[in-house]
Amino acid sequence: MFKPLRVCAALLSVVLVGATVPAQAVGPGIAPVLFIGVFTGAGPVLTLGQEALSSVGFGNSEERAKAEEAAKTADWATAKRVSVKLEDDMISPAWLRLKSGTPYILELENTDGDSGSIRAADFFANASTDASPILGMVRTGAEEKREIRVIAFEKGVYDMDMGLFSTAWGILGKIEVY
Image (cartoon, rainbow, N blue to C red; front, top):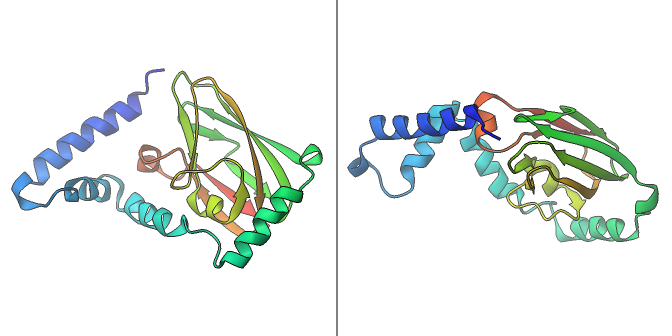
């Protein structure tokens, strides 16, 4: 499916970087970081840094071991199911409310003609999941339905979006763990 907002964002990035940052003025890899800060008001620069740090997850290995054991012993047949729809660069529902320590099966449904993702780095770093998120992002294929088993442990409200370009127009949702 054609995504005009993504195309516009990509074109704008080329224009901004090419027009504002001379190639000889920066070292390799600096221009994209400057672009992200200029294009999105520095939001994703901070988010990307948090993702890299939070990929470590729980504060210590003992907490991680408890979380993994809880996931192994959870009764997934009685787990609560939560439907999450990815469509037209939006996540629905935009607010997920999950009880700490309770097993959930997130039923992701991507109705778009291209791949999609949910990025919630801090949430995935502090939860036990079978999804193996990469830098806090879980991907789905085009027109794909996918189930993710998750148990959230760390109470809080976590940002959720669909990746780098979605943050250009704001955070798309929240995950509340109570």
